[in-house]
Amino acid sequence: MDKSFDYWEYFANEARRAGSPLYERLSRGVGGDEGLREFANGTRQGQPPGNILFAAVHFLLLRGAQHPLRRHYRNLGGTSGEDPFPAFKDFVDTHRVELSPLIASRVTNTNEVARSALLAPAFRALAKESGEPLRLIELGPSAGLNLLWDRYGVRYTRGSEGFSIDVPEAALTLECELRGAKLPPLGPSPKIASRVGLERNPVDLADADARDWLRALVWPDQVARFAVLEKALANFPGEKPAIRAGDALSLLPEAMAEAPADQPVCVYHTMVVYQFPDEMREALDAILILASLRRPVWRIGLEGTLSGDNPLKLYAYRDGSKEERTLGLCHPHGAWLEWLA
Image (tube, rainbow, N blue to C red; front, side):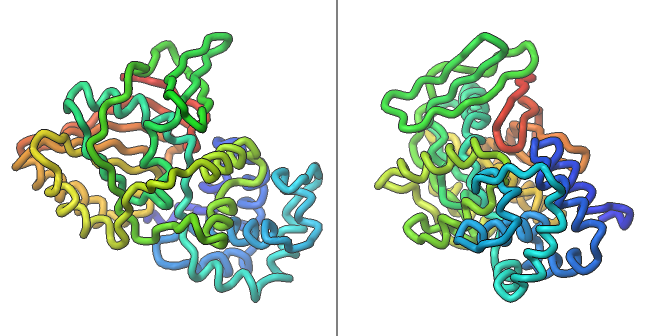
């Protein structure tokens, strides 16, 4: 990475764009504190220190830690308008013994359900090219909530206008603002033949600790996200989607090869590949290009960029070549979508 890259400044800008003044301020505070930066860098290789440090602190607060920092966390009833950084620094200094193992062992397996409002039109666009029924393969699905993107209703709003994807008996309806002049595809959902997730660190929703870590990864001043996650957890189906534990790139060729010839293979990922080093991103492309020599393969990706864009992309791999186009731009947590295709 460019030596001039300032990770904490980048994280602060991401928090500002995503609408989290709390994490914007804390990021700038940590960025200016050598001791906190060093402490946060104790993460597992490839894990973003900002997400892990903030989630570890949040995890202890969710589990009942009493400290003045709670006054700054809206999801815990906080309303303070004062600078949160002094309290944050004191909390970290006070709880280093509990925080250290969390930072050293946990991963950012967020399961942001609202991203399904972005996936739903993307898969409709994909199915027009690929046909159906679709063989879904999600890379890094965490607990698998976005493997069920077609089970949620979606209400898109643009000013006073409303546009819906209605799903009969949906236990959860997502809200998403539309920006720009174009409407995303809103027709019937494509048929799904099968769905499987490939995840190095699967989340067991039967484990209270794992559920609390999912909650801790949600940003505290974005209370609407908590409501969506809680409803998704409460209504997670008894028949859970299959998730295979292990390295996603190692498992991917077999998962694709299992699909019958009449099932288009659709690989997708949301805010996962940005954590891959360059060689892993190149390996993912190589796997899909090689597979496309036998059959077409499609891919949907929603990943952030250093410039702050969050493009929703559709890739087609055919006969050893790759085509790429941007379907839209969106909020990283699914709050809005600007459809471009």
